[in-house]
Length: 189
Image (tube, rainbow, N blue to C red):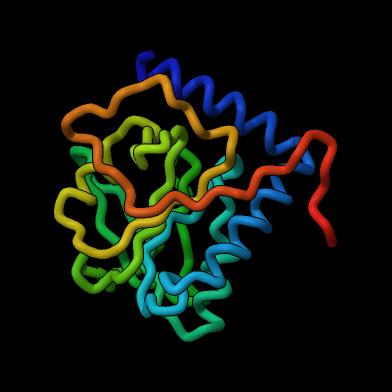
């Protein structure tokens, strides 16, 4: 199946998921798993995109990282499908791009080798740990030279197995998904 078709299917699923209580259940389960992990505990510096409305919400991660004394870097897009991460703090101002992405209005560049953990967004994922993003190739280009650990937070609605990665696609080290709930089962509170 072509990537553009998968992107459209994923966007449709994510819009529907945003209207459902299932979304928050998955968010809670994914964060519970992540915040208990050695990856989170050992990372001193984290690169993360500020999520759009349909993406996995990253504001919780950003706030918790600041509270834990971790450093956060957020990307800015550049011409020709490139991006650079910048160090931010709780007082950082952001500008919203024409694509609805919040980018920091700061100059302090975070070089790839200074970021321990990179949270990689995406629209579609497969169990081989490959992803399809919005189509600009920003993360695939960045990941070519990134040597740290990569994690993606994935809603079950984002799993598509009927596609093959292309030669420039970069695999993610770890996908974190919510545990499966049986039909009609709800998360215990």
